[in-house]
Picture 1: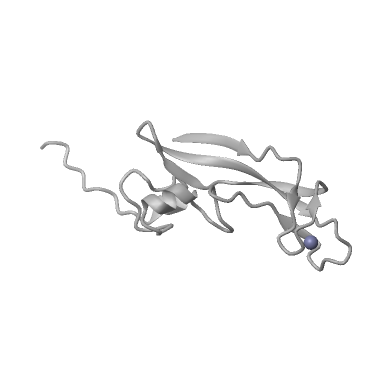
Picture 2: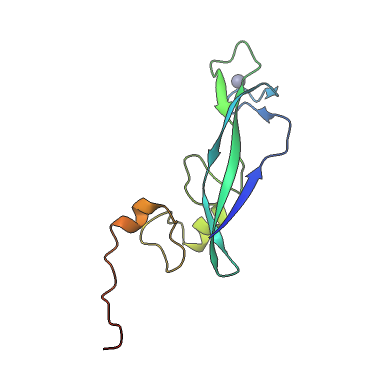
Length: 118
Ligand SMILES: [Zn+2]
């Protein structure tokens, strides 16, 4: 599997409620959306996303998480281009070779019967 580390290079973001620009970072965390296979291997992003403080004192939204339109959507587990390749689906059943490599997704898969050419 290929893992691509990525982050947004802008210094700030706009609050989705009041559209006020802010550069006050509250915290950040990693997301791991699955991307289209690359060179025949499963691909996954290690995407660093930031939570910002809204700079407008009158705004009721104190903090918000930056969004990356065209790349991921809120709570999305796959990239937008993989979602489109899957016809709008975002999970099981995965096409062969596209399933995420998390242990849980494989645990329920029945093992292929062994044939060993006997
Ligand atoms: Zn705001």
